Length: 243
Ligand code: 1GP
Picture (tube, rainbow, N blue to C red):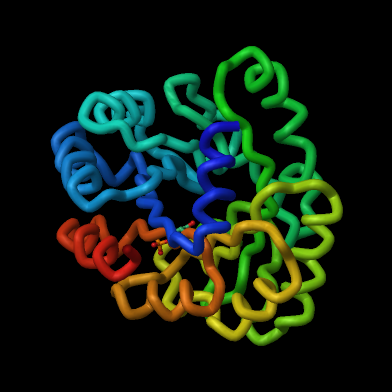
């Protein structure tokens, strides 16, 4: 459990971490190479690779390019079992605990289990909570689940507590990729006060200031995808703020 241990140790030391979300559909070998080099320069902690839906068949290529140009751990952040890839260092094995779709609570996991057992990948059981951002997102549509309402802190708290009691190792609060509004800091704060687990927050984080707000509220790891695709230089700016 190398990667998870490093997350726990960072949390203990109060060291915040930064993950760059790489959607293989939005990358070419050239852009993946420059993202890897920028991320290395910025001291990015992780790449999360995945998407709710993939149109092109280039995930394998993109992971290879990232791994060729830096040593940053690549964690799969899969929308479904078709996105399993043994080149990755690990996987966030997501249970969509904010939803009530059995496929995403256990069904896909059953299908993935033999592959994951046979691989040398680090598997990190993650309680994935989708939080409403005012508009439907690809993930809310594709997962066929209702997100937790943005102002229902108690629901988020109880969901995270249940995830912890079930033995999950991380809580991921996600407003969805490209969300117009990120998760409210007040909700992150309440979840932080009620679980010991490391908290990842993503979705709609577009500036270093937004990242800082969420880190101050109690997030341990911030994830940024869309904003970096539009402006790769943001990797350095956000990293600077986080460190
Ligand atoms: C989505 O948390 C990630 O699952 C990142 O979202 O693309 O909006 O940064 P963005």
